Amino acid sequence: MKNKVPAGRIRPIMIFILSVLSLAGYGQLRMPPVFSSDMIFQQGVKVPVWGKALPNENIQVAFGEQRVSTRTGKDSCWKVELKPMKATFEQREMRVTGKKSSITYHNVVVGEVWICSGQSNMEYSMQLYPGYAQPLKGDNLAAVELGKPENSLIRIYNCSRNGSKTSWSPANGESLKASSAAGYFFARNVQEKLNVPVGIITAAVGGTHIEAWTATEDYRRSSLFAPLLEAGGGQVGEQIPETWYNAMIAPLIPYAVKGFLWYQGENNCAKRDTMYTEKYKILVEGWREKFDLKAAPFYYVLLAPHIYSDRLHNKNRNAVTAEDLPLFREQQLKGATITSNTDYIVISDLVDDLKDIHPSYKWEVGRRLAGLALAKTYGILNIPCSGPRMKSTHITGDSIVVTFDHFGDGLKTIDQKRLSWFEIAGPDHQFHPALAEIRGKNEVVVFHPNIKNPSRVRLGWHETAMPNLVSGDHLPVTPFSTGL
Image (cartoon, rainbow, N blue to C red):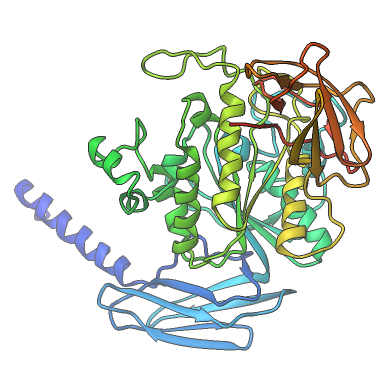
């Protein structure tokens, strides 16, 4: 008869075995998930490579002709930097070697890397979720792309929500299914224009607020938000900071990237958030600091028309009004004036259904974001990157003349109809629908038969407004209101 282990000793023995196995795993060379085969490194900057191993272990990293080495610290962490490299289509190996183990990554290229973040409209995938609407105009270009052969010049990385293993992949019908459509079409347009490999890292979750993407420590350092954080027991308003920042952004730091794309705000708008500008500034500056990119470009999407007022959103059940969306957009616009190297695109012409918060035409969203990057980050001339933006106004008799910049070869209407959504106010500051006419290449004259002494003018000042004024490049006008 075989000897049996007394039942009372089984648990201690198992704990001992698990402890040994844990220590064995702890001693292995380990790398963050963002390092994998098929990855892409950012060109033109130092490229951090980091991981964990046993304390005081010698670590060597080899990539191309570069060889760098270091030793792990007492905390088992190590980090080296590869020297800046030029973009290349050459698919090379990177080998990381420790004392007893090594890791080899295959098919690594060098090019441009961007992080795409936000809520559901950035998460909106190439393969439509059930219930999402097909576009009413033209083909579903995302579905068309899914049927194309693999494109190894574009690399995809989708951050995990729960820490599960994920990896880089060349763009193909399988890897693109769950990838950001706006992000992919941004990458495709940039790749085709620059003729270098392009990678996108998607970190986006539907229904999230900007606070969830911001580190608590960044709010704590703010004289504006630190008191709110303390008074709220660790919350900013009703929101808990950094939940998705910790899950998706922090694990990427300090991976070398070029810049950031941001498509978020719907939830903050629906909560009638009046501090979004300041929150945006803190997020931008916090991410730049942590990625060690002090002036990294940050491009975002101005919210599309949508009927927010048919819902009750906040705890005291105050209804959102039709003016809350344009007021929120003003906060978004202000973000570009108080934070350096940020800019936005307008998508008011991409809505089929005003009750649908998810516009279908993400290929056009990506194309417009790419236009900003190509013009402003990469300095390519003659790239249309914005529709008309109000530059100045002046009163002439019973009319207000609005002067625009970013008008291309001249202002026009996208539907060949009379200009829409202009309003004018008299001395009482009460707005009324106005008549408007294009004059010359970049001016619009706005007037009302019964208002002889106009004082203010605005455009697109309603949650359902889709103004038909566009530039010569068919890009839509930015909504505005004077006298705010």
